[in-house]
Length: 287
Ligand SMILES: [Zn+2]
Ligand SMILES: [Zn+2]
Image (cartoon, rainbow, N blue to C red; front, top):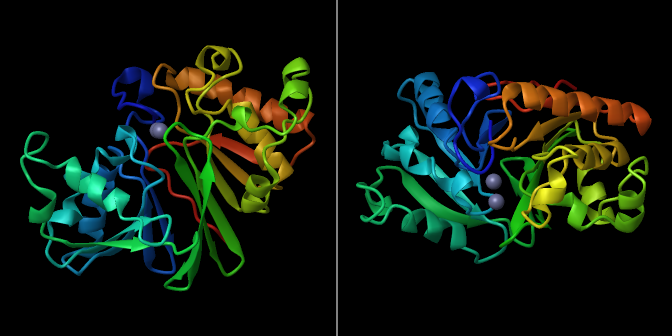
């Protein structure tokens, strides 16, 4: 699972080289966050599981950077006439994402037009940033990223999962100057983001950079993994999946990044369990 660009090869085979795509399945309802190249494998799996029965999906795109939309033309269920897909914009009347998916399949880019896909695909919206979809409370909040990006939260029967890819926490810290002077100080993201993540069973969070890499990438729109840790600790998150690994990082580099994150949890006296997002991994949320 890499950010920015697919990164196949032996250096990335353990955590995976595809770009972002996460399925969140709640009591039979399927949500898909982002359509990076990982969506191709998910599509194959969904079609095998469904054995010809109609597939219904809710798709939420954090934003339209290539690494988050490029897999969609290779999503098998989109070619099946019985499939229904709702593509959500974050706000009422916002059909931008639906239009951009259409645009990336213009004939200069791809042989099959969006309008020729067999599935019934329609735009939807999250109202003013919150909507209950088939009993699941889905919320969106804007995060700091060039061109804009949204984090999404899913809540059902007391369980809470937050998908927060592509955001640069270090740009919006409320105690930024202090934390730069002293790396031992807990970095404080904006209170509304902390509340958004409060008590999550799982936070899937941009943690692209190590401490050493970040100074060369300030303003690129991604977080230090250790800043994702601080958000998780402040918000009492149970499990933190460090996500959107830098394409330059080998799997061994990712392992070292996660070790630093675990050290930081201890130093900040948190209880969050940290691990690296890995392709194909399935997590079950118990009560
Ligand atoms: Zn990205
Ligand atoms: Zn992006």
